[in-house]
Amino acid sequence: MAMTSTAKKSAGLPANLGRSLQAFLDSLAVERGLSANTVRAYARDLRAHLAFIHSQGLRDLRRVEESHLIVYLGRLRRTGAAPATVMRKLSAVRGFYRYLVREESIGSDPTANLPAARLQRRLPSVLSVEEVTRLLAQPDPDTRRGLRDRAMLELLYATGLRVSELVHLSRGDINFDMGLVRCLGKGSKERIVPVGGPALEAVRSYLAARRDAAPALFLGNKGHPITRVTFWRIVRRYARQAGIRTPISPHTLRHSFATHMLEGGADLRAIQELLGHASIATTQIYTHVSVDRLREVYRSYHPRA
Image (cartoon, rainbow, N blue to C red; front, side):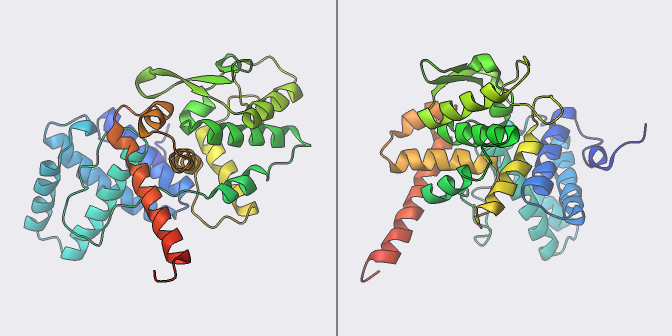
């Protein structure tokens, strides 16, 4: 069987590095909508970087440190790469590690303190409460698909689950009486998350419209559990319908959940538990998001801002 073009992008790398690369490339294509040529350019730059990482005896990206990246950049310069080329490759590497942090595959970004101030760290996109309300109102409740989509969106925003956790839920993971959902997070760690009334009611309405006994909570059109990529497309379609211009993905609802909880007065440690973060350092990014929101409000309403 011929190797697919996507498989070629991660060929020749250890399996775990190849999977991380492929997941990032998929997010560029599906989540950010980049062209095939742009994705291929990212693939070339990152395969070269990961080959270097592997040559340093590193097979776990959690062990990559700033010192490894400094050596990598130095090697690029010594081989005669133009400054613009080095910057382009560094931009791809930065984007890759930021993605891994966002997906909680690694705990910290080894590129965070590298020079090049103009390549600043991007904070996660967050919707306003009004934008979330518009988004949740888009699915048609008179169709089974609309009921499913509404239930997924409501549940994701109500719990802050990762999209991978959402699509792997089973019917038995929802406790309607107690208002709780059980999920398996990173490293197969189980956690219990409270669920609000609107999300529970949306899930209950969807299940009442089902005519099957499949254990998966959310099914695609052919009766199989819905996939992460399919849900990405669903979220983007409803965002367009809602007139939301902010770049959006399923992870945006997770970021919005955490930011709105923090702005509502929730303790950072409690948010850490709800999100399933192993380290409080990962959760602290939402404090920066909230500070940015405060700056916006200040600039908009203070007479001498």
